[in-house]
Length: 508
Image 1: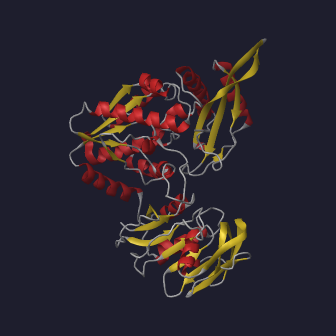
Image 2: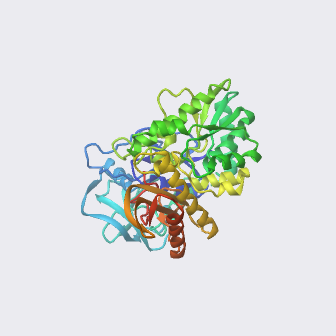
Image 3: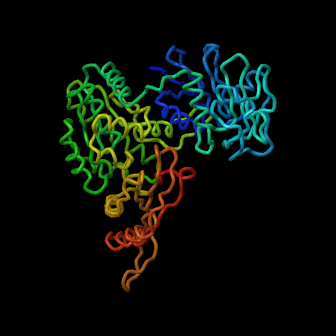
């Protein structure tokens, strides 16, 4: 299977580069800049990502491209372009003022293959503090902006390009075209990586990895774990044992409804009620990361206990997807950890099972495409993402049964209203959050001092970025009234209008 290799220098846009390439039906791998694998024939090109670092800094990320064949196409983006110039003898200096935002790109060489079908002038997106002030010997300018002369360049006689703008973002009008020119044209990729081809290759890989062993998978009723289960079932059949854990942190009545939904999927599913354990271990914990890790640890330990009852079980399967991985990992010296995901950040070192993650390299929309190809029930396929730690990270502060019960009722009102108003499918994810504060209110002739509920609804494609959903005022008024009137313990409802970034989708 042909692929493009993306070297990650810590940019928050690295995932977006991968998305753009995959939209061309070309597979790509993201690897840390300091862990470049052996260059095999299936690797058709390399992309160097951006970075929050400066190439002039003492601890700047410095990849070793010594093992890369001279004829393999390379495209450097932002920091990647600056490093290409710097490492070949060019000059990179502070620009004086940070260049951030829209700029107009002027093509200098319309015959260059990277700029095929790109108009003479178009908008691009800049985001850098340094700039290339002098190109290395053997490089030539192929495009400029008013403020950046060396906005795009090519090394003469080599398939090496550098661009100081972010072609992968929406604001770069012909950025997708440039990436297509690189991936499909210069690198010569066929663009035949489809959901069906992913299923075929993944099933084969799972069979090879697992053999005759048995696998335990935690089902949640969501898209990720359901698609993972179907892939595994297709690969190993009855060797898969699914477990659905009631942590006490699920939505209202979710334990029974999820078990019911899996009856027609041919899966071997066992329900385990473990709410007492989760609430006990969460007592007194208020810090978000500690809560995530405690919940993740309990999930794994419950699985270990259940797995011990199954002869020859060797693997713990999880529905981990790409955004979970990138938000839980860090390129040393470059990026920072935003949060740990329960699947990738809460696993204790003494876990006795190997981990298999068939969706680890897919974005959410790609998971849905695979699920559709596998014939997953449309009701599950269209379900909003729900965090593995559940309502434990939507109850801010200490998690108690009383608070979770309040949140479950409020959440049921919100989700139910979205469905009644036919807004559910217009929203990528909706959540209710219980704040650890109380405020004064008036109900009837009495003074109240009760909790505040936050409503959160966003639109997104894959969860890497998100906009707050502009829900109708009438809808918000109805939901607010129904929660305050019907949920005991709440006297105030507010709506979160922050996008990601700067906020995250979940509050913790």
